[in-house]
Image (cartoon, rainbow over all chains, first blue to last red; front, side, top):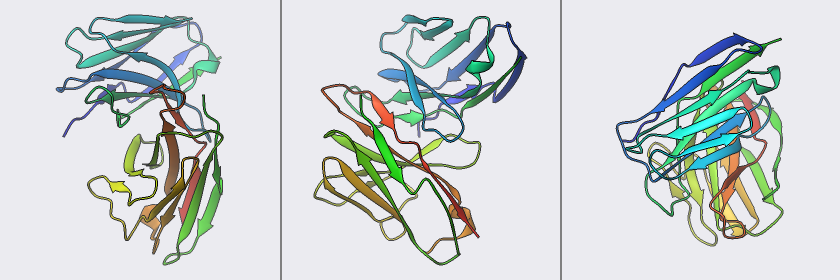
Amino acid sequence: TQLLEQSPQFLSIQEGENLTVYCNSSSVFSSLQWYRQEPGEGPVLLVTVVTGGEVKKLKRLTFQFGDARKDSSLHITAAQPGDTGLYLCAGAPTSGTYKYIFGTGTRLKVLA
Amino acid sequence: SAVISQKPSRDICQRGTSLTIQCQVDSQVTMMFWYRQQPGQSLTLIATANQGSEATYESGFVIDKFPISRPNLTFSTLTVSNMSPEDSSIYLCSVAGTSGSDTQYFGPGTRLTVL
């Protein structure tokens, strides 16, 4: 069974701080997605990474896919209260599949 | 992109009853999925809703407990049958395969509480 472990599970930081969330597995994924979910909403896709070693930036968010495509990280620079939410990574075991395995989640709270 | 609506948005139900959740998409999609998200936790895939045929269930989920229908490319229902408090959860519909994209879009979820 393929698992995606995220760390940390919970994170509470002050506005302006930087943070990194990790998504790790012993399995290889053809692609990996990061989502953010706010209370009462469904997850919203932030980014998809496909190539080992790939780095993508979305404003203050930097996403990296590990060289071996088994892990990924999300780095947020100068966090803001609007970044508060549940961050989920999701991996596709094979290319062309729409079925993703979701990570265990990281709940982030940014205090003003 | 795809706009997904779910009904009801939330419900409180008695043990032993059943609830049917509807998922409507504003465009035709290739794939529709149903997920469960227990409070504060990640998403677990229940099944893939197949148009015109029986849904494909993941390990640990069975048709008798979670019957699913998908009569066309824009609509699906999930029924939670013979409910118990352990079924209290958020149930999410998601779709993929809109306009050639493999992006997965999620509905707002249905928050179910079973007493």
